[in-house]
Image (cartoon, rainbow, N blue to C red; front, side):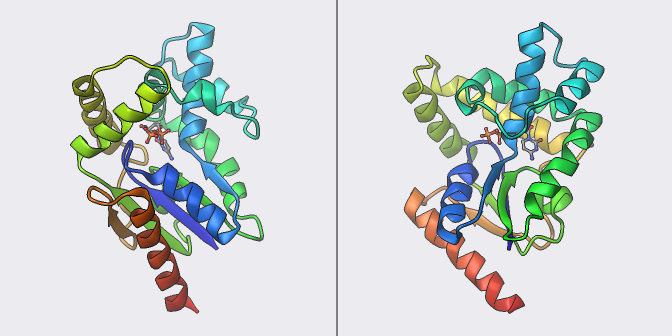
Length: 210
Ligand code: CDP
């Protein structure tokens, strides 16, 4: 079973994907980390984020099985990731690895922006997770503060709006719900309620295809 989870920044898709993977005993891939790692490589080398050739080289030489999440999770890397993720050749360089992760015999849970539309269009279940920009900014602000970053809520909200516009407006694999995705709005749900709603979606999809 392949479970595809997509949605905008801080919608809760990562937490949901992790919990679904544990619940169904499947491996999990957070595909945002791939784009964050490309951005990190450029930053470490002092290359500009819009240097397409350097970004493709970085994407092709990532050690994909060993991404260091703590170095990639910060606010600046989320913003930088969305810049490199708009480069079509960077996305193309990462497709085969994501598909081979998804197509292992037991299945997998992948979360990102284009899993249901581009990476796994035949996924068994597709869930598109949303929440209001204000609620997502509150969650991301809390997360960044708990990581030790000093940042104002208004700045996080501005980041989220800018990132939504860039991710949805780009030509290459824009953030969008697949036509057959189930929508899950987590604005008024806590983690447990969102998880239960996602499990209900997965189980309903499995019953439909059984
Ligand atoms: O955790 P958050 O939702 O803030 O970010 P993320 O999932 O780590 O993704 C960071 C950036 O990578 C996004 O803003 C997208 O531009 C890009 N991304 C993408 O284009 N395609 C994916 N499958 C995953 C992430």
